[in-house]
Image (spheres, helix red, strand yellow):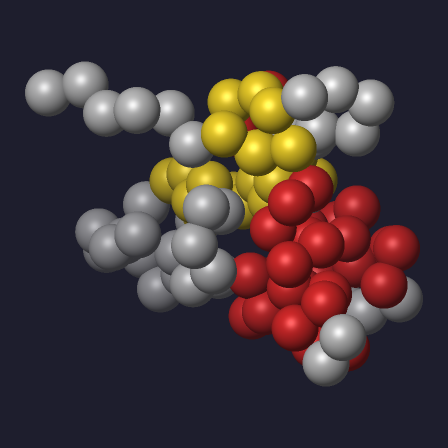
Length: 85
């Protein structure tokens, strides 16, 4: 069953689908916020609207191999929440 795409505001435009928003890697946010990759991963791992790609339940490995892609609107939302603004 098809679901409606979430619409988000994009700078310089009206609303566009969430998949068109700029998506950041963990390393990019870690650099911008001067945090470690692991700290950023912990902040965004269970955040709604974050893309989590890879094995969520590893088979025979000790470590999960996942890639996070974090939309710009999620980065903004989390920053506001953590800043208490």
